[in-house]
Image (cartoon, rainbow, N blue to C red; front, side):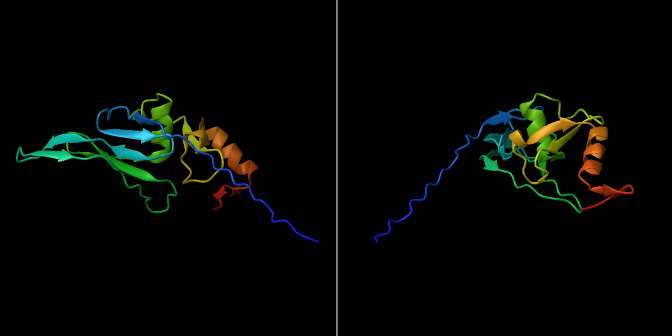
Amino acid sequence: MLSLPKIIYTFTIIIMEKWKDIQWYEWLYQVSNLWNIKSLDRVVFRKNWRKNTIKWRILKQWKTGNSYHNRVTLQKTDWKFYKFLVHRLVYCTFNNIDIKQNNNWSLVLHKNDIYWDNRLSNLYLWTHKDNWADRIKNKKIKNNILLK
């Protein structure tokens, strides 16, 4: 008997990357819904007043110490560096929340609990109380000790 080859269908989902200016950093940086952060083309005057043209680029994200979350450093025209959590930057930018406002009552969390998955569709806003209740429910905390 003649056997026919199996046909395997593969589907690829194409997600369009949308860019939006970061609040307080308009004309300097943009963030995408797929958690990329880029600097924009601009002309900068150095301390010796020389004009320097900077081309756009995707910024490198990094992690600190025992934190799992990606961070990025942004610089304004005042020559100071400011560090931001990428997932918070993505959520606040696309939902028009002030990034400089310290919302102690709110957390930006990941729906699938994967810390490096900072897509906008994977982020949501919760309170500290809800976060602790979720950790206890999912058995990530036992006797007030955080389990990793």
